[in-house]
Image (tube, rainbow, N blue to C red):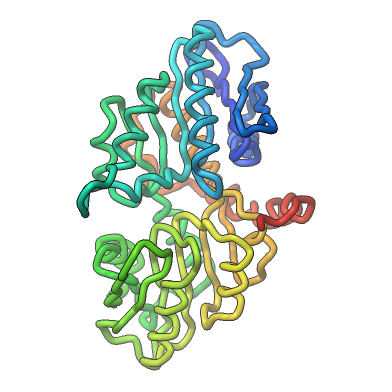
Length: 346
């Protein structure tokens, strides 16, 4: 697809090589040549291996399983692109993990998302593309434009493909914080909502689900959330739903950040199927028969195409094209093939 200079130039950091490659396949372009070296003492070195002078550059780097190193690599590449005289640099961050730190909710803590946003802009980003921020107000931490994509159209389309969208379906929010997301998905699917009552007592990655508010007996349930790290909350909700007489329990997430122990918990849980996107590369998740990974890369590729060709994109993701969905749904086998050649994350 042509832009103002004829070619879309997409580069990728070490955490998003496959994601960016799939974006390039979708757009019919070649991925840019860059490299990252991690020195033995822990320092990161980055290099762009081709000229990008006066070009519009799109750099893909998720902040997932190793967010601190991935964030440092992102900043170094943004700086390198600017110093190499790129015309503009768009930071594509499929999963922005530090969006969780969106407020000062206790004394003497950092608003981490705000710090990260300022660093990204100071390093040279002219624009940011991301998906399903933990808190939408994080967009306001940036002075540069932020294109905030949503996984909901992709997840809803897959729910329909599974054949579970009918009068017996309930969308479940694990807590009050995800209620807006659950109501939006329920409106799209034409079903009712139930809400979990969750309590978190500290900074660990699990929370206790105390109760489920809503009628779920004899119903199939889709638990929706933006991400999971340990699987604990999802599993607690699944048990609570089963205790209240629910039939099959599904989990639909925007991002999955599971290591091997979390996947084992999901596999042993009452959850029938966990559906998420490939915004974070989780080899252990790809190997599970209970986890279905859809690709968000075509959605990000369409966003890049619209930005590069100066096409308005406000309407783009309400009704994703059949081609985009087909390309998203076919990724499971490819990702599992790739994961089988990788060393599982310990």
